[in-house]
Length: 121
Image (cartoon, rainbow, N blue to C red; front, side, top):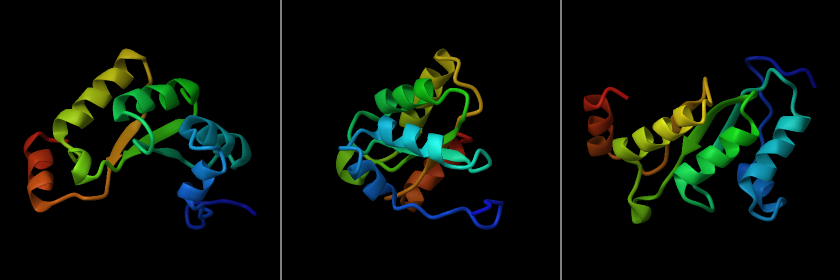
């Protein structure tokens, strides 16, 4: 299958991680090896570990190919905050992981969104 900007293949990420025994970095590297190079590498983090720890682990392993990370921390675990995103961003910079965007998703509320806008994220 030729992959272009309009037909990225769909992959059930939860199943993908499950087939790699919950090892998110291993799953992301398998995806990286097998997908065409023009498919952006955006990796969901915080599935099994601390968000910053997992971002660094995945960022180091995919330093040359990672396009971004996606954080989806549930409200029950503190939710996604500007401070969390700032912490992850600084740690990625400290590891010289360049060009890695940070996406947030999940249990965002209007209040969360307002916080991000005020912090200019």
